[in-house]
Length: 323
Image (cartoon, rainbow, N blue to C red; front, side, top):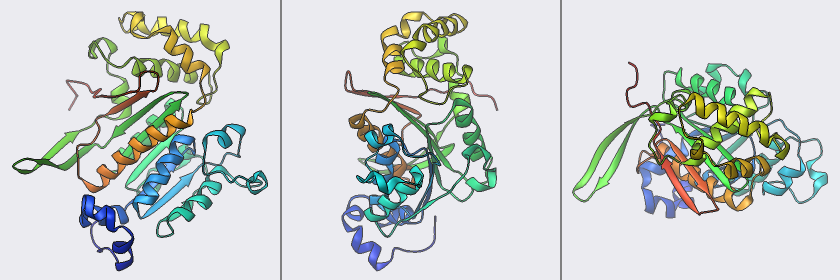
């Protein structure tokens, strides 16, 4: 992302942002390339934020047709349903995002994300995926890690009034402001596979209940061959049975994963638009920090539950990593 300076047009358009985070940060944003998969409500909020911030390019992947759920949570959908005919979610979102900021190149890539080879991801600086199976999250994260350059990887999921963000910046250096000046800092991130493999019994005693509950739901959908969100209240007995089995295997008291929380996640597989705005806003902020190299980045999970209105950051890493 090093090289060209901002053009006169970019400097004029992003003047207010430059006053906040500086010309160098804006230059990095303007030269960045971002890939997004899964045009859910939370992701469209994120896309809107980074397009307005002025990234260089945004590539969207989602071949699904428009559904009733998309119309209820995705504000980028056109009000005229006839305009949706024959177009994928990614194509419709691209058309709307182009109107937000014509200086950002928004394009669509068709195909199954899991079928794209490692070299495909080399074109991007940031990869954000949503609406993905557990296996796909692991696969894409590992493909990003195989590249010679560092690619920032994020997963985001929103179910009803709850949301989760996972961040993998690999080996990340950034500048941290202090009263006596600026300090260079370095963080080492685990992969998604490494993070969720940390034994539950070794996690902090007050670890977010949402972290554990999301792992149960994720595992249930994988075991049953379901698509993300393809779950309903009739599945609750099986989900509770799986929770019991996982807690026994992990030597964890079942009370750490309240049945009521699992019931909410099972019943509310759809997104709740106000929560989409919050999670999408946090995600946009984190991606901007990662690209610009300014500000403390999130490490490595973020959770939000509108029932208590709390946002929680959890660093879930193996205290004794191999190698």
